[in-house]
Amino acid sequence: MTVVEIPEEHLRAYPKEEINALPLRRYEGPVHVVRTRKQRDAAIKVLRSETLLGFDTETRPVFKKGRKPNPPSLIQLAGEEDVYVFQINLLPMDNGLLDLLADKKVIKTGVSVHDDIVGLNKLAKFKAANFIDLGEVSQKHQMQTHGLRNLAANLLGFRISKSVQCSNWAKETLTKQQVAYAATDAWVSREIYLAMHDMGLV
Image 1 (tube, rainbow, N blue to C red):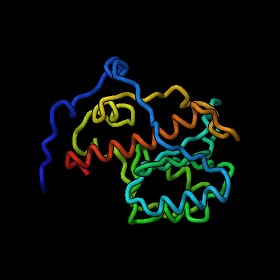
Image 2: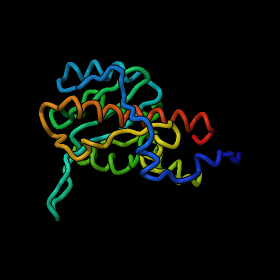
Image 3: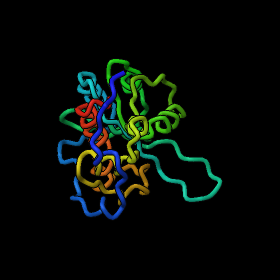
Image 4: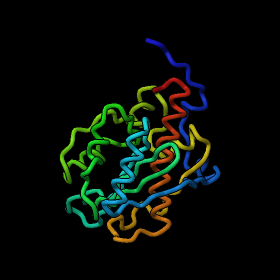
């Protein structure tokens, strides 16, 4: 087994104050909000040609104790040039979207992907394939950063906003801030994977 030499700077923890001092970045490329069948079919056609997708979901939070968690409202998939935000609370996950999540040839990468998959399986059954959890990769290599924000700070040198994390993701019309946040999470997941790949971690 090859032992990967990781620079000490990437093994240490990143305090909140240090992360907050980093420049704020967000995804600035094309974002497609997918809410109709026609849009979904066009998106899947493009995404089928990708070999690596940044992956995330967003779920409307539950604020009352004892209530079951809501199902995911969004799936975000980031390709090389575009990010697609699927409003799965408005549109079923059929016509190729489930096939993509089950495609062994396409890497899907994110943080806490197991929880996301469990939530999605409550909406539609599929056998998830080739998902890579960035937090699990970092733990395996004894890194002290596991969450998306901390990994972005550690490996990419910038911070991402979490300001609308607890907003209503089930809204029919998402705000510009919600779309930017959702797209950024998927894009950053892909960028972290590429940084890890360059270091020989994945």
